[in-house]
Length: 116
Image (cartoon, rainbow, N blue to C red; front, side):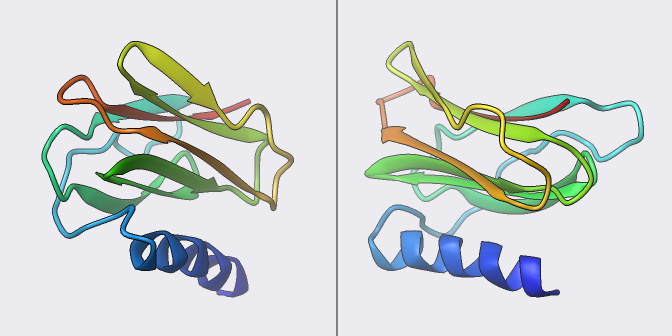
């Protein structure tokens, strides 16, 4: 619960800064065979939090596109892509929060998560 609280604080801070808005987007399913996934974040005001790959993934876009992934079981990463440019958190140790952000594009905004 403590880790979820920290992840929630990261997302809440991003929301207060106007980075995330209200909305819903499709995310990759959480199953034992998934080692990564992505979601489109093209709708204005898109944000979502979902459990994937054994961790909690939050992403969204308003002004900036952001993605945060917390996984206590695996080394993991998160990335965002806009205007053809990808920004990655790099590989993050289990138990630490991975984060990435980029300015949003008119279309083609994507968020990604991965476990290793």
